[in-house]
Amino acid sequence: MIRVENLVKSFGGFRAVDNASIEIATGSITGLVGPNGAGKSTLFNVIAGVHAPTSGRVTMDGEDITGLTPHQLFHKGLLRTFQIAHEFPTLSVRENLMMVPEGQAGETLWNTWFARGRIRAEEEALRRKADEVLDFLTISHLAEEKAGNLSGGQKKLLELGRTMMVEAKIVFLDEVGAGVNRTLLNTIGDAIVRLNRERGYTFCVIEHDMDFIGRLCDPVIVMAEGRVLAEGPADHIMENEAVIEAYLGTGLKNKVLAEERAEAAAGEDLGAQPGLGDRAGKGGDA
Ligand SMILES: Nc1ncnc2c1ncn2[C@@H]1O[C@H](COP(=O)(O)OP(=O)(O)O)[C@@H](O)[C@H]1O
Ligand SMILES: [Mg+2]
Image 1 (tube, rainbow, N blue to C red):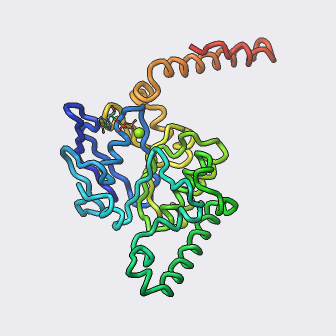
Image 2 (cartoon, rainbow, N blue to C red; image 1 turned 180 degrees about the horizontal axis):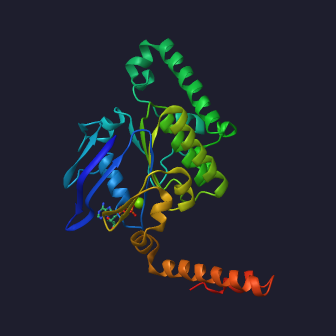
Image 3 (cartoon, rainbow, N blue to C red; image 1 turned 120 degrees about the vertical axis):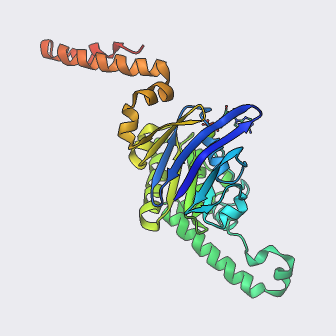
């Protein structure tokens, strides 16, 4: 379990994360939602060691991991993917996967000269592992494709694949659905669920698509203005007045209310004038 306690991250005088406390239970797919600028990515960055916190503490299974470097956290099985994908565009998808694991024998010149046989064996094992990952993600057909040619969604899948090349235990996905079409988003969602169920991955997922969050995540944590606003099952969260206000904004809240009123009105109309009610009800886009 990851436990974040009273975390503050200031940039100058501005508190991007303002006394946030959250828990990510082992084995969960925890959702993190909130409007742009809420501090979600900053919170991820502090947990993943990219930023040192201004104050507060992060523990992993009781061990204090506050301020450890991403490299040190990587060795504890904690991985973060970025809002913007970080692939090597001129390498193939398979090669991108093979780049990930650290401590490959081929890394140093010394090894290149003195351990050719071992390097070949390791590369073969890596290649097999990469192909297994591509198969798991149902993108084997893209193995030879240059990563730079992938669509946004395929790049996200590749990022997920890179976490599978190492023994990741906890994976932080930042805006996994950004710029991803519906079909690929479903593929990504399925892969997350299968990694969680079949391989024991814990996920913390930032995403704006509430259908995606609702389908995958329990619990869902809502942030706004650096603070944790609410936490609970997705359906509870989405009914929470404060959350609707902060997350959707007042304009959208009014739209939702208007639609609800219109639907109710349409229902009544339907009784009186069969066939007309539906169209009559859609005028309320305030
Ligand atoms: N490196 C930084 N320097 C200064 N301000 C930052 C930095 N990173 C984020 N912020 C600010 O912190 C706030 C939270 O940003 P962020 O964590 O990216 O929000 P979210 O991911 O929820 O959209 C924003 O107002 C943003 O401008
Ligand atoms: Mg962000």
